[in-house]
Length: 354
Image 1 (cartoon, rainbow, N blue to C red):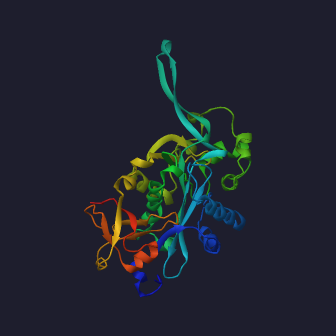
Image 2: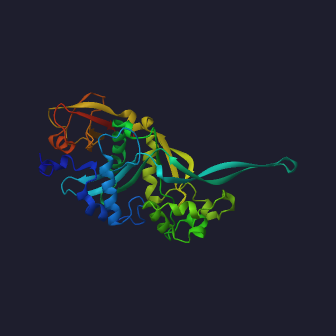
Image 3: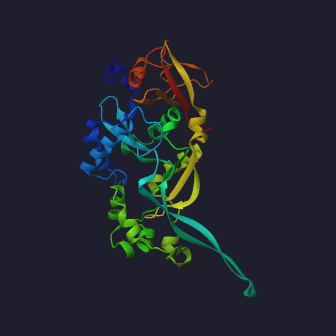
């Protein structure tokens, strides 16, 4: 079937693994990000390497999480253009260490003077075998506020549910920290800039490009007392970029929780969850595709349905709410998912807002 015929309106977008042919669209897409997406810098060679890295990650005989980095895109069915991207890292750390600041509350006690206080202290933390991580989420501004951001974010969890052997039991999300109207990070200006002598974006992009040796060489070797930082830096610790607020709310509704760790560059929060405890994973059901009339087009798209193949596909669809093990999808939707009658799919309803 052709997803670009008159039935395309029934499945306007499909979530799938990135392909080599997506390089041009991906470069245009990340070029629209005002403050840069450091996990996908606007660098053609780097993006091409990321695509090849993702293609290798889908090797069928992987049985344990390692250096795999899965990159997905949201394709507009009518035009074939890539309008969004999101990714999953099988395990952070490995050959490239994973750095965060761990915020610890330490006592300052001196009974003779009646002093008993608690002070927040930043400790540099380096992990070589960390959890899985979701990353690289961006949706073209023209397609926001229409629910497709949910598909772009949550479809990853169905892929992780289907192939638990490829991922760690826990997953993290590093959220972008606060950036001021002047385009600067108050935290970086106070903590990083005096040692790196580079602007925030240069340092963060270098890290995104895999150049991490400079971090251990230049970062302060001793704990940092938060109370000694400028007020502007203290006030943004654990706060997110204004464009990241919706993503944070979505992840928290899935079961992610705030940890004691923050990003070393912009002090953005690090959220964490157990994969099997994620709302979408718990709500997911396996079902068989059945023949029959297509769902009523007037009904809202109330969830995500995905195929069961390693060549993963997912779409937002009109799904049953009674947990049935047989679902009806339109021919266009079946075409987008690369499935036929009798094939197994996985589906999960969006979180109810009632």
